[in-house]
Amino acid sequence: MVVLNFSSRGVNSKYMMDIILAADMHLKPGRDIEQNKILSSFLDECSDYDKLILVGDTFNCWFEKNGIYVGDYSEIISIFSNAINKGLEINFVFGNRDFVFSKGFVPPDGSSYSGFSCIESDKYSVLADAGMQLRGWGYQFENDGVIYHCSHGDMYCIGDTLHQLLRYLIMGNPARLLSTFMPRFVVHAIFTAFNVYKKDARRNTELICDYLLMQDEALIPLIDSGVDHVICGHLHQYMTKDVVGSTHSGKLTVLPCWVGGEYGVIHDNTIAIKNISYS
Image (cartoon, rainbow, N blue to C red; front, side):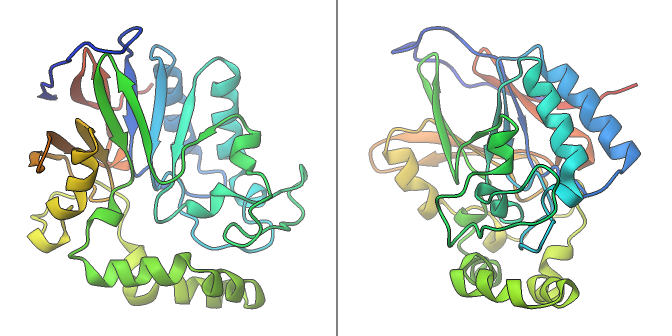
């Protein structure tokens, strides 16, 4: 277990929350018995906490085609929905792989998909319909005086110019619209250009080059706005560091990959990295 201490200032708070954090679940579509068993067991364990925050790339789904939501992910969404119905608050932060779940109407039978996330903003999300709290690209909250900001974090990796280019192209309206007129295998080939998005969804144990990390200059505006602790995923590797702004200082924690068997917990405003256990 890795423990990171972070003291509370104890202002403007009602109570201390215990929060569970999961990054980079990379849930595969379909009836993956082993994956779904682990997910169900994990969500049962989450019931002891005040809330669960999914810190991006929960799903492997970054383009829209007919039926891809309910048709491919219905069982996984049902597992989340069951946990929500039992009282678990689940907060969904978008990642670079699953932002298409932000908007889009899906009929209950999963027969067709009539909305496009970047074009028709008046459509509702199938995840919101299941009871998830959609938090956009960043979820900021206060816990007993400490201000946290959770985001997937890839937008702070400004030194990774290839990723930023692909992020811009994939998330843009032209690319989203174009994807609707092509066969799925063609769209998939385009959206996995240069094998960037074929990276194994598992814990990264290799040394990451400095230019691929979250850069201080991208984080400082958040810190200077009063954020004490930025929590991200994306890199699939646990790390933490101090971030010193011009008017405020804070911390960055990068969570390990959930698929690699780890997740984070905030308890008494201390972040601990724990291992997934299930029977």
